[in-house]
Image (cartoon, rainbow, N blue to C red; front, side):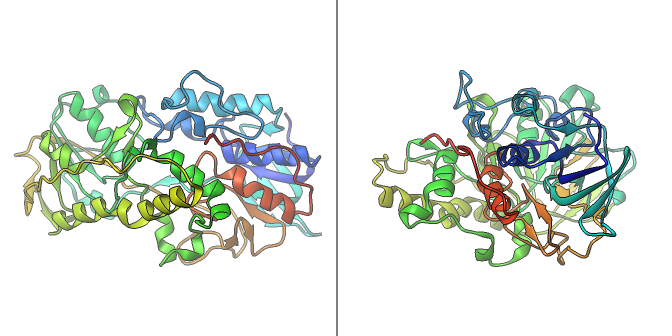
Length: 425
């Protein structure tokens, strides 16, 4: 559709968060437009690597008035499948999406409201909902510039497939979900893999008879009713933890645990953090063993007590914990010679950074996050949806926006209508 010169509400971003907001606005009969810089709706899913799969089960890709109804609810969608599903949702709800339109500036309007300066003209809106997520640009550490120029270096955002890399070993820096899944993929292709271990913890694929996301979804949607509320952002010890990596998990091969100790047993070389570079030699920070121990402890410290309490409070008949530990303690080299190790490629699986530089309003905190309370910003009429830890850890997931959007709708003074939540038990 064409970009209107004025509208009641402008939603920026046509991924699952922006489209969820559009559904709620439509139910409230609110005039709105959804603006996206891409050629079609669907968000950034289509920008992942070729063999990418969701870490969350298919049933979680259930949007308001559009529950998952495919043949494999407990499977894990490919990149193209999840992108197509989100794009189809835009069509299914007749969302008023304007594509190929980049918002360059967001400013206060001269007579109230907001002016959005875009590549297709300026639009005035009484309210604005920013639904662009929290993964705006690849984060590349400064130390990357110190590595030998002979190496092929790329961020995981630019990785596509194993054959596109030059022959030789691969060093993956970062051990979050993307780093571990790419490491597994390249290892299965016969590459020699080195992983510089980061701070990401791990979680079991299944716990007490169910996929871990069954329990997390139940906590997010029904925990408060049973006296076991899902932790909210104000309970974080430090606000910088909003950017912490998600637990290591995989949706490949039907979904499975990710355990760095097992990966080391299977032949991958685990390294500590890179401290400095001298020619071809990497000097590593001591503490690999401690990093693995912290990764092992994450689930038992943060999630297991909540899930166990919920199971008891809700009276759910669940089998006992049957997880098996991997006790292998891999060697910890102090240095590694890139040339001697045959490493030709470095993949930086170091996450993403925020970019709200186009919002010309004083709304960012010291960490670059918008100052907001459950999506309601300090600036009247400016809202956010789909942020990391907008309200809980669920906020940035596929089902999180449908939990937070009604709060924004109510804050706008609009009626919250329609059945928004259909979460399988």
